[in-house]
Length: 281
Ligand SMILES: NC(=O)c1ccc[n+]([C@@H]2O[C@H](COP(=O)([O-])OP(=O)(O)OC[C@H]3O[C@@H](n4cnc5c(N)ncnc54)[C@H](OP(=O)(O)O)[C@@H]3O)[C@@H](O)[C@H]2O)c1
Image (cartoon, rainbow, N blue to C red; front, side, top):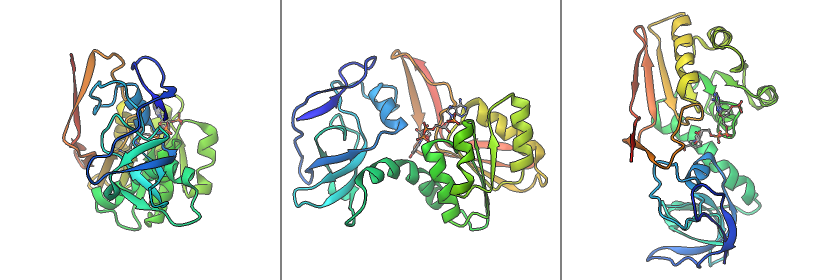
């Protein structure tokens, strides 16, 4: 069969022959209809994701839509594997899949599930989100952030502030439910002033950026908070603005599987249950 195959982490995947996947007990082979291409998949293909085992060759792809032997269309999420979704066929665990209803667009499902589930799980599972709460989405101009704006509204958010850099994508966010948009472009002082004005009293921050931009946003919000005793819950989902290891000689080691951080006034105590450390290897 044909697949996108990574044979070296410093070169892009190539469309080439790959061995047909072999199912273990309880698994089934599906014909892949569409595979999700997310930042997670890019870092998997580049060998920089923290789950990378350095095993090559590698077919990337962590989820997608496939047709099972009975003809049903399933959205699936794969275990960590070198037999990923970017192939004509892959192996799925049916327990990690859902049969899709007739008429759905498999490409839209494959593209949207991972970014949409990130905020859905965060707001439904990671924190006790209550309708009426206000939400700031940092990185709202990205795929996951755009979804987060809509998911927050769907879950009853009273006010959603959408922050990002790309001006055209920012302009499109009110039509998706954002009550206010904040540009993260410009000088740190300008950004801080905009965040202070639009988001000082938010209850929850859904953060896809992390790094210096998120640190500056924390300071801006906490400093301008009208009520410093009001809890602020900061959920880190992505880290697009954080420095990341570029060299294969450095490895990111992450402790635990949680991805939530909380900041509670008045002393702006920040707690992150997801810590990382880098060490030369
Ligand atoms: N844990 C999960 O389940 C899960 C699921 C989905 C995504 N994620 C993570 O969430 C993050 C975003 O994913 P995505 O699919 O939305 O990616 P994306 O579509 O590429 O969007 C990237 C976003 O990050 C912003 N950004 C990038 N670098 C930045 C910087 N230096 N400073 C400020 N903003 C910056 C972009 O802003 P502009 O475009 O405005 O420049 C954009 O809003 C990734 O880290 C991804 O791995 C996690």
